[in-house]
Image 1 (cartoon, helix red, strand yellow):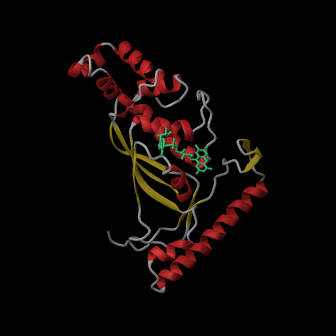
Image 2 (image 1 turned 90 degrees about the vertical axis):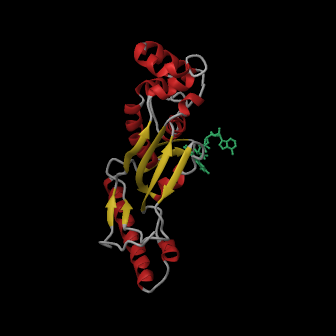
Image 3 (image 1 turned 45 degrees about the vertical axis):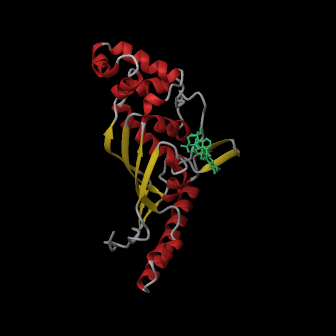
Length: 246
Ligand SMILES: Cc1cc2nc3c(=O)[nH]c(=O)nc-3n(C[C@H](O)[C@H](O)[C@H](O)COP(=O)(O)OP(=O)(O)OC[C@H]3O[C@@H](n4cnc5c(N)ncnc54)[C@H](O)[C@@H]3O)c2cc1C
């Protein structure tokens, strides 16, 4: 891998995340094919078109009774660009996931940093395990944006100064904060994605509520949108059964 010098070393600030579906072999038929192999063998793909109600029923039964393995015979690869603090949480998901992240050793890190948007609730109320987030005041919004931007600028200047003085990228990057954007490919299957969504999104149909950090939830919501289009029957069964991964 080669170094790509920064085209414009001036910091820029983002309040959103990027999620692109770059590759997939994933459909409801993959679930049915796997589930029916013992009885119908190769005929099962044709049966999906022949009897959609039966297919819907089978997927729902598998989801409800937590027969999980038929949901593993598919693959989705996402390109994700998000702050490093999101990736720290993301990569805790070990099972059914593969990751490749951009290197801070082989290339100069670009100065793109996270600053929460106006719709990001800033203030936490209550105690851990039982708290909620509420809107911040205008003063809190202004302070957050200003403090973050100042701090990011200062950190990136120090990074640049060290690089200019010949310090290795892998050493100089230590000054950069977790609000820096990184990018990765993340590959999963429907079962591992459902487990992720159950933990990293909030949803009215969730039987077991979770309380994820908003920024990883933003990534999860975008992945969910892609997946829902690829596997509508599986997606509907996931919701109908309380968004618990089978
Ligand atoms: C709201 C929220 C708050 C969190 N807060 C913290 C925190 O404060 N500190 C912190 O460190 N983490 C925290 N986490 C991370 C959390 O503990 C998990 O590491 C993360 O959610 C990944 O879940 P997982 O292990 O189920 O997923 P995966 O690693 O994908 O594992 C999937 C499943 O495989 C099985 N499995 C995987 N590995 C093992 C194993 N070694 N032994 C037995 N079974 C295994 C389990 O059934 C597991 O559910 C938080 C997560 C959430 C959603």
